[in-house]
Image (cartoon, rainbow, N blue to C red; front, side, top):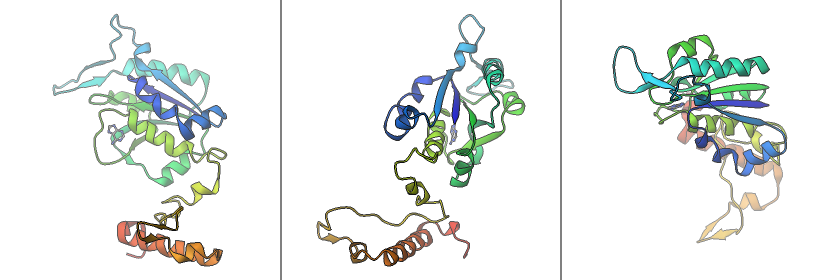
Length: 226
Ligand code: ADE
């Protein structure tokens, strides 16, 4: 998979890809992430990329042309399966969306800043508009990093134990059950006996019961039963 990210703040997108699972995924060649500075595509003398909004109102808007130039160049090199714009007014991201994105080959992600991007870029190029939650970030970069993390960890070979992504919360519309590691007793709190017993069927049943209980308590909206 290849992911191209367009931003006016490329440095915000360095550290998420410089550590741990995402770093290894890139090193092992499971994914290529290319960050493009929209400012490099400005033809104005001062490399301007934003301007006041028509009609008045506080906040700057990213201009269409530098973003368009960057996308046009990238599109001469490959075809993108989706052009995603990170925006709080987009579809709220869920695991189903992430699973779908993880199957694609070329993704282009646009990060907005200030008041966002000129609507005409959305009309002209964008195929998906994605929000990571009902709150407003100062830009789309952190949201793009969240989206990339969620996608990349699903690419086969990225997680050392591939089954561990299958048992994530949400993969079966259930929250994940509690987990424990050593020691068996910590500050008077014991690991449930069933996990120590070694009966795999009992353990699976316990996990399913706990996942259901947790989902019913915390996220009843995920269950069909109400
Ligand atoms: N940009 C600003 N806020 C955002 C959000 N909640 N999701 C995606 N992109 C954003």
